[in-house]
Amino acid sequence: MPWILGCFKHVKIVFKNSMVSLPIIKGPRLQPNQTVGVIAPASPINQPEIEQGLKLLESFPFKIRLGRHLFDHLNYLAGPDQDRASDLHQMFSDPDIKAIFCARGGYGSARLLYNIDFDLIRRNPKIIVGFSDLTALLIATYKKSGLITFHGPTLSDLSKDKNWQNLSRLVTTSQRPQIFLKQGRIINKGRARGILLGGNLSTICSLLETSFLPSFEGVILFLEEKGESPYRLDRMLTHLLLSGRLDRLSALAIGQIVDCGERELVYNLLKERLRGLDIPVVMGLPIGHGNENRALPLGLPATLETERMLLKIEESAVC
Image (cartoon, rainbow, N blue to C red; front, side, top):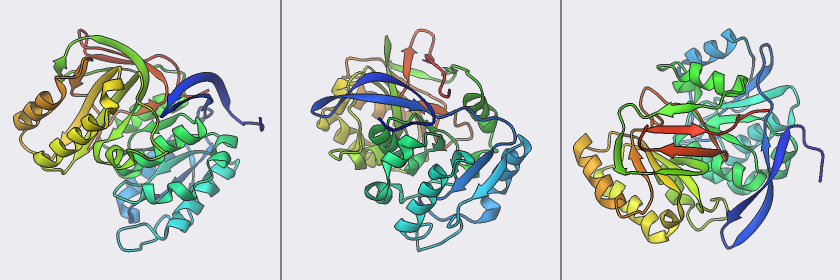
């Protein structure tokens, strides 16, 4: 086994059609005055859109290294695929960079997956944070390298609500987050334990039947979405149900469903589609495209309790 500059433990995880013994790797926790990188693996970004986020990082204080192609534009992408992948590889290979923050989501992360050197990532484990379309990058990185990745705010959302406060605790301390679903609603009652995975609903659907999506066996899955009409939500949930993936879950937590129709309509749609699952199912996890986007580590054991409306991560996300 090559030398890995991080910490790992040996666990067994069920992958599609096989049981694979995989070292789960954590990146080292961040400390003041270290250098962090910023990249745009998906849609283009302009500097004013991330200025507040950069100031928050600088105030920690961190030194900031901007990706060479961070502000590139190519239609709806932040430059050609090879350039966006190059920025990702450069950040992981540079020993001075201790964490990687994504500027924004949008679209384009999945286009990079065939070009990513996951062995490079495994040899150089570090924190990487994003959400929305970046779900593809985060989940694939976890599946292919074993690295614990972070579903959390991008630079463009970092200054909203308490996003940075919550994320910084997760990546700079040994905190084991406990997230209460204060405005949550129960579809199915119960208590369950499993590996936490999740992200954007449409992005996860796009990864079905690819080698980049882990098994859902025993997983606590969380989902969020923005800007989809109710019938499209229905279609994506039905796609997941027909795939058989949801039958293998330990529990399901729905995050923020933003600009997808009236609240009660969305609730009734989710309830109708998901109540047949014989697992705990809740709504109201404070993650996604709303003002509050709590950071969650992908790949760690967690417990969901509907009686207390609590999602509890069982170990530190960094080493």
